[in-house]
Length: 115
Image (tube, rainbow, N blue to C red; front, side, top):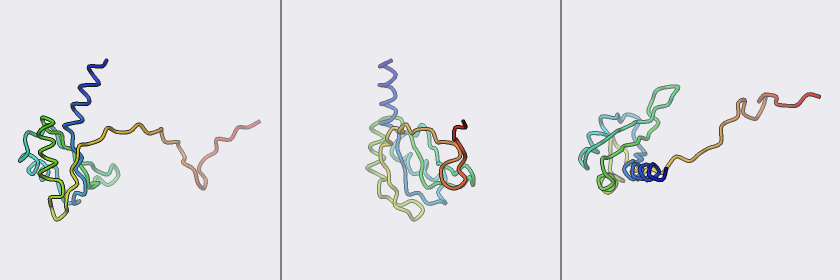
């Protein structure tokens, strides 16, 4: 099982968070820019699930950790579509507790025990 964890760590070293994107930027725009740093394995522009509009950030996976670091050096604080990008090595996604249905607040649903 330890081998798998090591593989995952290597993947994380190649995965970049690209933030402060213009809502007009497309995956093609991002790929065109980042291919200057090396081979792109994947590019995923994050979209709002209700409106399908850009959420202003993306994840780009480069082929090697060296290419990922080169991309950070080349593109962090560089402009794309009039916005200065924030580019860094992506952090592992934190485990968050599951959301409770109904939320709190007004009319947020029962959950009371009945006697």
